[in-house]
Length: 228
Image 1 (tube, rainbow, N blue to C red):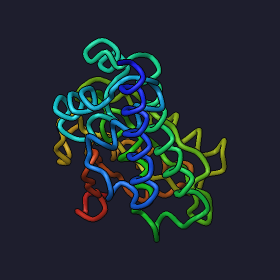
Image 2: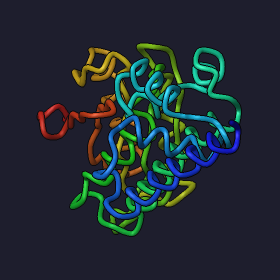
Image 3: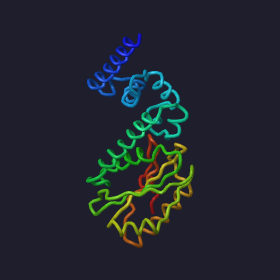
Image 4: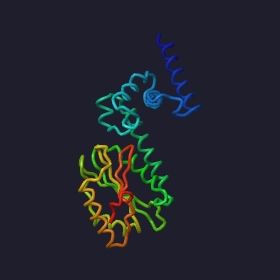
C-alpha cells in the first residue's frame, strides 16, 4: 500500500510544479500555492490539508506571510522547516523590493519606497518607524528601523539628524506602519513628524514625505498637505 500512495503524492507534487512553471501563480489556487511551497520543506507528506488550514486561519497569503514564527510553529504545527521557508520567502520579497528601491530617484518613483515599506513593516503587529536616507540623487543609501508597541514607536529626531550626517544623506523619507490597518495619522504622528522636520532643518536635510503603511495601503503626508 505504501508504494502506490507515495507515487500518487509524488505525481501530484510534480503536477503542481508543472502548472506553476507553465502559468505561474495564475495557474494555482491560493491553497495550492501554499501547498507547493510546503512540499519543499516537508517531504513525503500530503501538504494539502495543512495548506487549506493555514489559508483558512489567516484568510489570505498576505496575512500568512506576516505570521510570526511562534504562530507558525505552535498554533499550526508547520514545523521548523516549513516556518523557516515561509519566513524566508517574506524576507526575500522584502529584500527584492528594497533592491528595487535602490539606484532610482525615489521622489519620482515613490511607489518603490511604498512597496518596500509595505512588505518590510506593513503587516507588523507592533508599530515600527522606518527612515529611508537618500543621497543627492534621491537614491536610497541606507534605512533604519525603530520598534515600538501596538500603537506607538520610539523615534529620536536628533539620532536621525546625526545619522544623516554620518551617511551623507541630503533627504529622508519617514515611514511607519499602523497595526490597526487604518492609514490615518494620529496626533502623535503629526507631532513626531514636526519634531523630525525641525531636527532635519538643523543639518540642512530635506524631509521628502512621511508615509503610513499597512500591507495593502499607504497614506502620504505630503499628498495631504500635512508637511509644513
